[in-house]
Length: 221
Ligand SMILES: C[S@@+](CC[C@H](N)C(=O)[O-])C[C@H]1O[C@@H](n2cnc3c(N)ncnc32)[C@H](O)[C@@H]1O
Image (cartoon, rainbow, N blue to C red; front, side, top):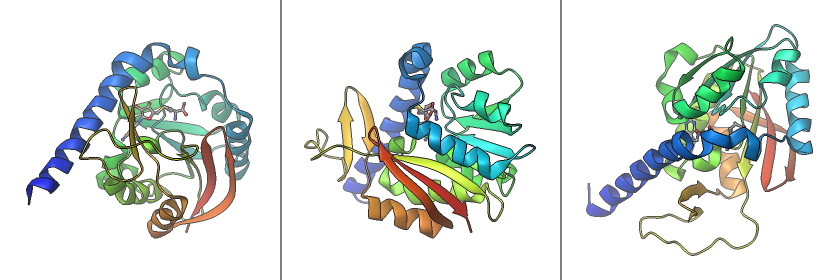
């Protein structure tokens, strides 16, 4: 491995560790107060997902955070499980929904977690894929698809940067990556994201863009 590859590996590892720390110590404290509102487009895709599921279905909320969508899913008779990288975010979710099973697990680890494979009737991964580096996207997409039974629906969002991306602030950054306010986000080209989702085994259905998010309703082939 040359120095450039080693630098890049170190960069991605640093950013992942910082992300966990920021969600544990900073964002989990008042996430619901700051970000608890559900936009109309998020509500629309949540209802589209719930319509495809029906009572008794089992859903995985991947990168569930504080469980913002759980009240609606539980009200629809859906059984929810959650994973997230942040124990702080999961503590908030558990405080509100002690009956929902959730554990610390990174999206990057799903593909190698047999307990999750082929187990779910539906999936949501909302407002979180921007934390995934480009080299991890294909494995994360495969990990998400791998949790689902054939024909199962998934609602995912991909964050969009409005306009031209700012210049890199770290020499180890790759195109599409932004470090701002101490946080890291990656904004893939839409064609690249679609190619990764397709390669993972997802077909794309309804789509919409609103509030800096691209929403996709997918079906596991
Ligand atoms: C903006 S919050 C969104 C939470 C929730 N999905 C929602 O829509 O309210 C992003 C969440 O993604 C989680 N997250 C980010 N990167 C992750 C990763 N690689 N694996 C698991 N969780 C991750 C964060 O810990 C945080 O809880």
